[in-house]
Image (cartoon, rainbow, N blue to C red; front, side, top):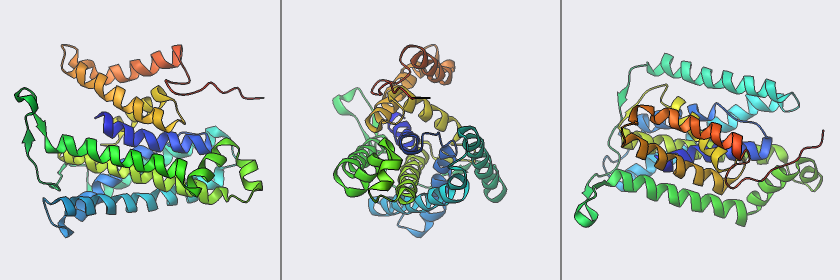
Length: 284
């Protein structure tokens, strides 16, 4: 769960790092990614690693295109407007995606097809792990390493960091802010799609509102690690997943969802910048 929260949180934190606003439609891109996998699965070899990875990559491409479209038609016209206008628009886009999904795909939960071969492991003879659990961790680690390489070792990553630091100065040295922002949305949406596929593979069920609660928890994870900080988002997701799982295994299991938001309140009170975040002073 922590790995899935980390994938979603990365989209929140990258968009915030570049544009300084929270894209609340991001959790519904997560849902669209799961549905993309559901409809693509019959066209690929079932229960094979190659077929499952092909579905995963195709869903990531579809959601990357969706993310670019959302940025181009919903957020770009409001870039010079107040943050409140953008926030309201983000909520509107979220509701639009949720209701469109219910209109076209119905609100009834659907069983997600088996994409990868499944088995169980018993390391040490006391712990039982499913291959799906291992898959989620391995895919998440690979995607995080690829993201880290892209941000710190490529020209586009350098451009993303420049726009995040000072968009005006970045444009003066020839960086296209529009292209960088569109790429950021595409990248974040692709990671959300990967999270949606992995979530559906693990829970084997999808429905149009499946992104609401994981999306809110991923936002908590992003704030916990330090909003705008990529390693912090990953760390926050893992911590939140571990805490939530331990709570579910205790007598307080009915409060597992409340625990996530209690963590948000605590972190905002005692360390608003998050675990790896830095306090930024804004001139007004």
